[in-house]
Amino acid sequence: MKVLGIETTCDETAAAVVTVDYDGRAGILSNEVFSQIADHAAYGGVVPEIAARAHVEVLDRIITRALAKAGVSLEAIDAVAAAAGPGLIGGVLVGLTTAKAIALVTGKPLIAVNHLEGHALTARMTNHVQFPYLLLLVSGGHTQLLAVKGVGDYLRLGTTLDDAVGEAFDKTAKLLGLGYPGGPAVEHEAESGDPQRFRLPRPMVGRPDSNFSLSGLKTAVRLEAQKIAPLSNRDVADLCAGFQAAIVDIVADRTRSALWAFQGFVGRPSAVVVAGGVAANQALRDALERVAREAGLPLVAPPVAYCGDNAAMIAWAGLERFRLGMTDDLGFVARPRWPLDERQAKKAENGQSGGK
Ligand code: KG4
Ligand code: ZN
Image 1: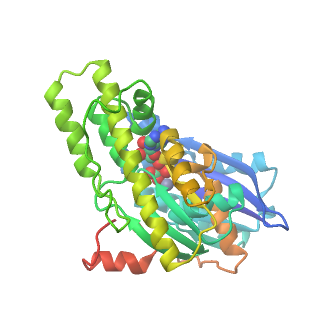
Image 2 (image 1 turned 135 degrees about the vertical axis):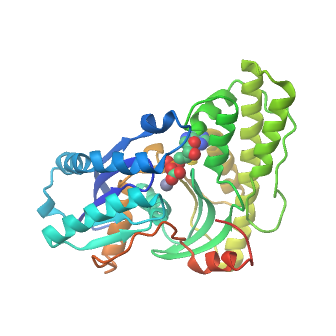
Image 3 (image 1 turned 45 degrees about the vertical axis):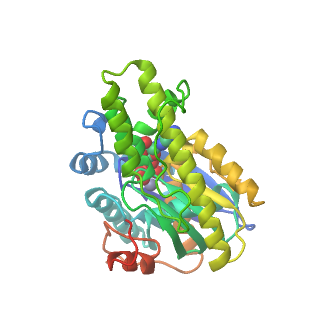
């Protein structure tokens, strides 16, 4: 079984071909990613209109390259999967419409994949993790703790009430005059900084729920920076180290809390899994390793290339759905918002608990 995957929900144009063997182990035959970071860097963030146009310009070439690297023709593909949301609607439309056109012309089934399900199932592709497991999804747009019980079966245990973790890294980097994306820049500065110099808050730590709130931390960094401006290189490094240490403490505490909730609602997880672009952060990985070890569980952190946005994860999520007989019709409408746990998200919208 071979599935072509297409990813265009943010600033990466990506296509991949993924297969599976009889034991259920994935084979990534190709994984092409064209990053638009350079197009957006001057604006300090992703500009939706620029992103959509850039996807249109390169997607056909990226798909051709993914097929060529995998050594397969379109006719040899069993299904085509595209991320159909959540994300920037212009980009999502480019990828989904392209997938529909391929499905129509080749007569192959279409699978409309939730981008978040792509992140959620990545550890099954890279590490063959078994259900159920606790997932910490930390990216530029999302911060969630989820019980992953099966394909399409998620219980959201925690979410952010304001900024996503990656967003907090990006905003802090911008404030300190570092480049975009901010995560890698802040991590790099933090390596030579003193995490103790500034006393930064750790909002939500110790609370019995598993939610996050990061805007207060971001504001605290801004106020400290204003107090000592103009900033020396040493100041920037110390602020980055302090910020990263606070984030790591918060994420570790919230993950511990979610593990408790998981055991109450679902039972014993097979692993703690981390996904999303922020999972590239080594300090965060080390802290999660300790949290998992305390609970007697393995930490599964997929290789960095599969943590950030990529199309292999979309192809794999498509493959998981396809082998369960879950396909979509060509009328599937792109979804700018598409929570994995629709029930919890509805509750939040009705004001029973917060979060995006
Ligand atoms: O998953 P992703 O590639 O895109 C989505 O947001 O869906 O995640 C990108 C985010 C950005 O906010 C970026 O700053 C953050 O991941 N990031 C990091 C690191 N590498 C990327 N954050 C902290 N430390 C890193 N090393
Ligand atoms: Zn993502």
